[in-house]
Image (cartoon, rainbow over all chains, first blue to last red; front, top):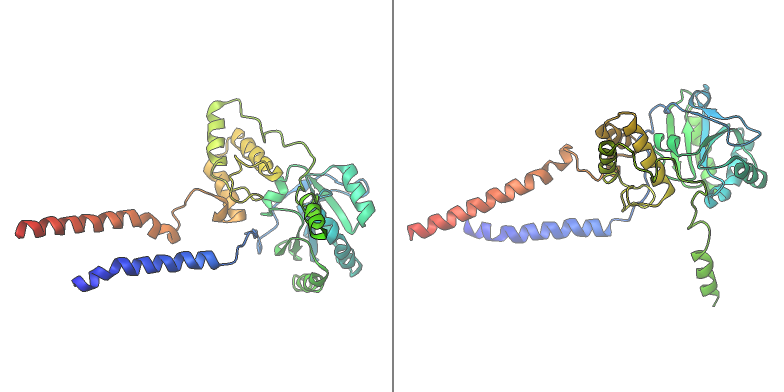
Length: 175
Length: 136
């Protein structure tokens, strides 16, 4: 009994060392995934963010056909890097709606004139309210919305050229 | 030299300073006139983690998104919503991660039980010591 008891602090110590080491060596993860993936898109209605595109409501995203919902901002540099991929997706026949975060109409117009406009509708989320309701934590992010208006997939960060086939597959699967 | 220029360019690149130029949301930096409501909102904001600067609460962070969250929390408190309902709404979207306030989720039961367990072990050891001395 005594011999066994005397080793318990040491065993506990080793257990803690193991626990802390696993925490130290685990790769750092700052990506925040939305818990709404697999659930319905929350209801929202946003005014237009660009002068030649209508605003966006959640009902318009659930159309019986999978759509891409892109969250961007004219002040966001990775969003500019993402633009050619969105144009390629649009060319492939994908319907893309967008939410502009904390933006102003002249800035959005300038951004779209410079980088192209792949969007059918653009809603203006001036105070990030819809972004928070979606469980999104930054720009750019993209959501694949399935034919029933459920969030099928969340892409965090800009869509790179080699992500495009994967996004197309996800859209097909969301039929 | 080239490396230095590259580093300087990186340090001043807009992507690192990418923040919206829009003014903050109406209640981001303004207190609710009703002191009791403001206290409620403040207590909640201090326990909600900022999504941009992840080791700060939204009460401490200057990120524009933290300002938008503060404004939204104040607006909801003004509208009469309970702080815990707002916390639940955020946890539904971002997970337990977004709240600094520990919950009573089963995964945390060992954490809550640890002080009691340690105290019990301590009492047991003390009793054994005292009991042993009396006998000798």
